[in-house]
Amino acid sequence: MGQLVCMGAALMCTGGVAPGSLVVVGKRPMCPTPAANIMDNKPMVNILPFGLCTLPSNPMVAALTAAALGVPTPAPCIPATAAPWLPGNPKVLIDNFPALNSDSKCLCSYGGSISVVFPGQVITIA
Image 1 (cartoon, helix red, strand yellow):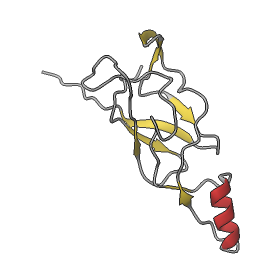
Image 2 (image 1 turned 135 degrees about the vertical axis):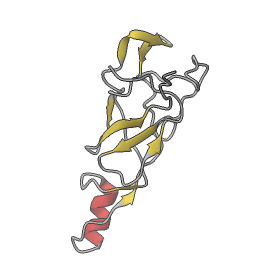
Image 3 (image 1 turned 45 degrees about the vertical axis):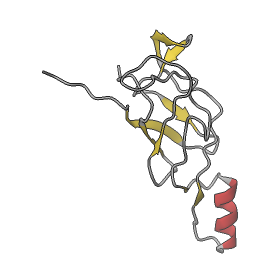
C-alpha cells in the first residue's frame, strides 16, 4: 500500500512532457500539508498541466500534427480528467471519500494515465 498523498505532490502523465503538481483545496487533515482524497481530480483546479501533451487522440495535438503535414507536434497540456483517482485507500476516509495514496491512478480523457511520482511527504526513520 502506498503513502498518503498531500498537497504539492508531483504527478506525471504518460502523455505529458513535464511533471505537474496536485493542489488540494478546502480544509483537510495535514500530512504535513493538506491530505488528498480520490475526488481531488478536477482539471486546472487539483491537477495542473504537464507542459505539453503528446497524445495523438488530443484534438489540439491532432490539429497541430495535421498542420505540420503529419509531423507529430505536441500541444499545450490541458488535463481532461473526468473520473476519480482509483483505487485510493477505502480504510482511510478524508471528507467522506477514500484517501488518495501514491499507488492510485487517474485517467485523462485523451488516453493518458496520471500517476503520483512524489506523494508530498517523506518517511523519516530515526
